[in-house]
Image 1 (cartoon, rainbow, N blue to C red):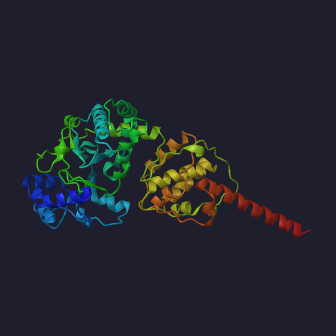
Image 2 (tube, rainbow, N blue to C red):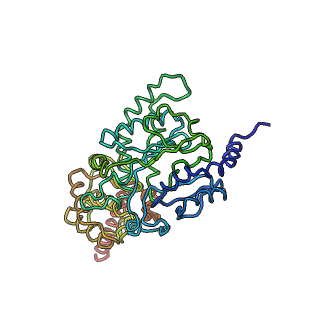
Image 3 (cartoon, rainbow, N blue to C red):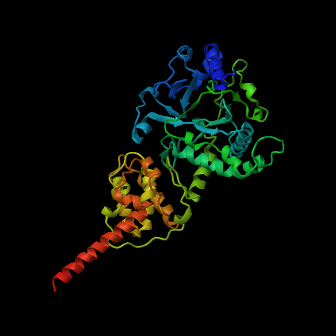
Length: 437
């Protein structure tokens, strides 16, 4: 009887778990990388409790004896990971977070595509003056590229860089993705070796850096952790070893330990971050957890001037935003500026509404940040804010009413609601005049 491949792999990894994690060099590699990180073991049944951290070297083997198959950790660095509370607001997170590493996750259906992507990204990082880069095999068909927190400037324009998570890592990842895309298409499409790979312009989409990983409290597989589906180890590589790497090189019974954390210099990634931020502004990409570029029929929207505009004509999501927020204020600011401009609110009134709204936020957005966003917006034509549902659900303000079913964008809601209200007002005026005759 033919054995199920997944069943075979599960039996194999269960068989080697304790033997593998009993190795002192494996324990040391995992433990040293865990400093200031939230750590969570995974069992075949799912992840362990959160938050957790490694207190002692021996914790790794003890968890393995209880069935832990792999270990995962945060990109964010914390004063004390055990003080993390699920549902923390932005202020609480910023007070506890001391930094973050940039972790670019490259994954593909085919490891050769991931190799090409990894090499192009490393070339780009070096072009931006980053000489020390961490690289490891993901354990399946991808790679993880690491730039440590030490390499980033600690403050930009009086804003603490440690507070700008996940915004800054997302922006950098998008910048890298965009700048390597054409070369990636060229290289993948130019593969000449006969194989089963699809050589078309959709192929690069399979290997772009995964921005989903760049999110609060997201975990990634730790160096030298095993992978449940392949029974391979997440081995560390020198960048020059990527092209010749074969999955058999990650056999957990044969691997040799290397340090995943590169010895970077202070500020080594400053140029990369500044270039990414400049690119971000020039390309009109909104900041936040659900970034969305305005395209399609709304991209060339021309603002109109509404008469007798009242806040009661705003959709429920906007009314909730206007009550003040704890989280997502930067994304909300982008929405409000573009909504107000799209319905013809004049500059002076717009700024008054924005400042009144900010007074209700906890904590307040810095005036310098608001002024820079307003200034940047005024230099460009108005665009529609993000379409409904997903983006506003991410902000935690989506509570649709019956009227929401009829529209796809907050601007459409305001225009139609305002039109209806004005008609009702006109009908009442006409009714009074008619009744007075």
